[in-house]
Length: 318
Image (cartoon, rainbow, N blue to C red; front, side):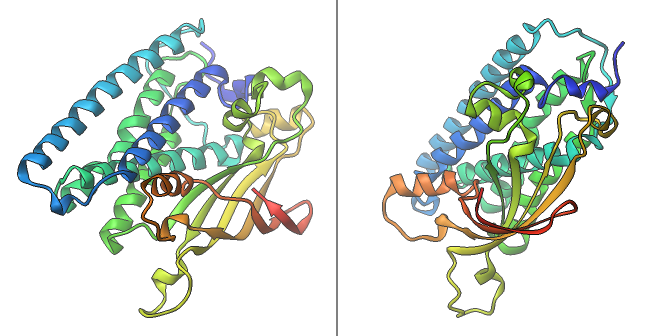
C-alpha cells in the first residue's frame, strides 16, 4: 500500500476529493452564518416558538448533514481512489501547516454559526455555547474518516487536532468574554503556478482558491476596543490582525518540494482589519452580508516578513 504522503505532490489539496470536502465545509459554515443573521432575539420568543425553532434546527441539521455525507461519499469514491483499511498518517510537516490553519478557520466558523443558530432557537446560553461549539468537529470529522480509508492519504491526526482547536477557540472566547473578540479570517490572492500543474490547482479562480495553498493567507483579527478600559473611544469596527501564509510550495512534503527545485518559505503579516459586524445597521440584509464577510480579511495595506526578503510593505494585500 502507498502510505507515504510525499505523494501529496500529486496535488495541491488532494485533488478533487479535498476540493469537494472544502466546498462541503465552507458551504455549511456560510449557510449557517447567513441563517443566523436573520434571527430575532430569542428572549422575546414564547415557549412554543422556541420549541418549534429547536425542532426545526435539529431536523434541518440532521437532514442536511445526512444528505451531505451521502453526496460527499458518492463523489469521493467515484474517483477510482484505491481503498484501504482504516489508518492514520502524520502529515503535520506538509504545506508549512497552511492547510492546518484552514482546518482551524473552517471549524471555528462552523462552530460560531452553530452557537448563533442555537441562540436563535432559544436554547439556554450555556447549552448553546457547548453544543454549538461542537458543530465544527462534527462537520469536519467525516472528511478524515473518508481519508482514513484511502490508500493514498490516511486520516490526519494533525487535521483532527486543528479542527478541535478551531471549535475550542470559539467555546473559550464565549466562556471568557461572552463574545468573539479574536476572529480567524481568510484571504486569497492568485499565484503564478506552473502551467503544467493547472489541473492540480484548478482551472478557474474558485478552484484555485480552494487548492492553491501558496495564495492562501490566514489571519487572527483582534477587537482592540474590547480589551481596552470601558468607555474607550477606539472604534470597534477597526481591528488589528496578524497573518500567516507560505510560498513556493508545489509538493506537500518538504523533501519532495526541494527535489523538484523549490525552496518554500513562510510569510508573516501585520495589518489593520475591518470588523463589519460592529457597524450598526437595522438592515437584515446588511447584517447577513456583514456576518458572512466577517470570516474574510478584506484588502488592506500590510507589513510582511519572510526569510528571503526580510520586511516588505504591501500597499494592498489580501
